[in-house]
Image (cartoon, rainbow, N blue to C red; front, side, top):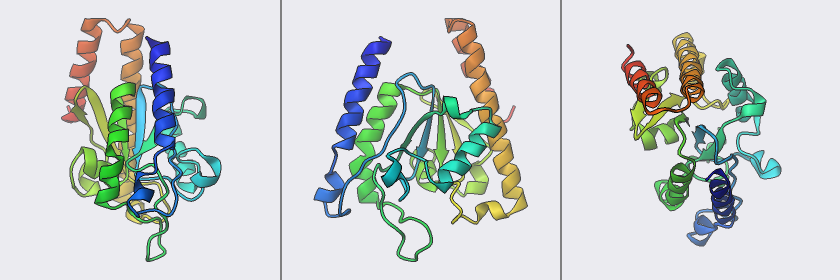
Length: 225
């Protein structure tokens, strides 16, 4: 089964990297979809879109924002050798924002064109934990809410745990506030606890009772209990 999923994911990645829908629709001058991960990954990171640095590396989250995100993951107990599946709401670099501050936020039409790829990734990988990085990913899976209302919280949705995180870009000023930095620390501690919960369930052989206990634990944590 694992080998079958590996082959299926390789085919899906090939199709994603060959996509030029946004170019055909006139939203982008060229296409360079970027995605990375394994079919066996239990954790998936969903960001907004690749940045300019990713065009040279071909890997998600490889610029300065990605380096900061990896530091956050390390605080949660996820090291470089165990990086999660990494993808984004849209798979191509959207270009710089008109203001010059950061990258352009993909339009709703671009998000809609790219949505089937993300749904296919979720269906194939079936992550147990999804880290929503930045407001575009949070809006898509949690709803349009202020960052301060969701960072540090989790929600069980369709058998997976959603954990929102702010975008690690230096262009964001949200983390300038001490209370928001505290929210981030709480969120990273939550990531660490939830990943360790997966490890405990795996060590118990993924029995139905262990799986039920893990899901119940996640539900309680999502309610702050």
